[in-house]
Length: 156
Image (cartoon, rainbow, N blue to C red; front, side):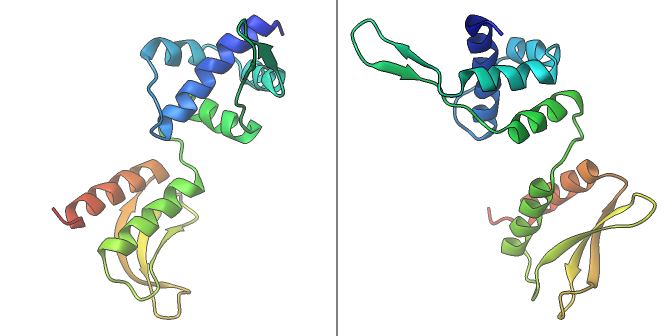
């Protein structure tokens, strides 16, 4: 992959990844461009930029930040499926509710064999549900409901 193509593509990928973490912003054109980009090209650009340095005219060097293949794959999934969720998203939701709703052993998520998702308060032993708080037919649907509940319970 040509270095100039790799730099341009990698800048878009890193810009979106950093913006998801609250650092900087991305624009709709970058998102549209990335949606048209194959995952392998995003991964190649990241690999090309690893350890790449540019000499600056006034002296010194410009270094580029890179990320993991996993982070790029996750971004690719999110770009192509708005309902994509990771276990970290769901773990964060459980932790957030622990701060707002008293539960001796916290909260958990159960998924049954039919694809139903339940957000539960764990029992005292921590190995089962004391109470089912929310239910949904998808991870993203459940996460949306948990976020609404967290907002409702958060102090004003």
